[in-house]
Length: 114
Image 1: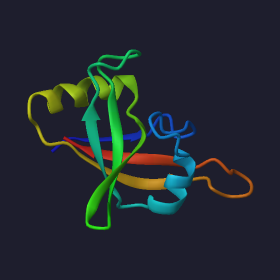
Image 2: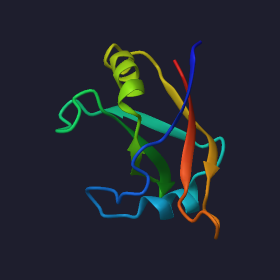
Image 3: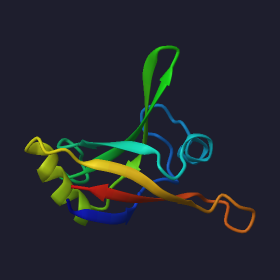
Image 4: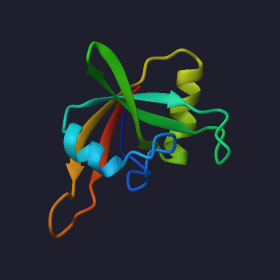
């Protein structure tokens, strides 16, 4: 099994459809070991190879999904191709950085198993 280590991109932007602050989602729900869901976005106007990364949480017996950010273009091209061909891709948070007085912005480091 191949492994890729990368950073989640776009975590300082608000979630596009809901306007939810991604930083607050990360602070509240994301920690090392959190499993995230990669999803291809072939209709993405900026990059047809884009792969969005989602947090799924159960709330009142329903799944709630939050769009946390994107894989970088170089990683997304390969991961997206695997997803398109039905391969399983596992994305797990390896580290949450920042979120302190000295560095208030949170970052998310990922490990991806192909």
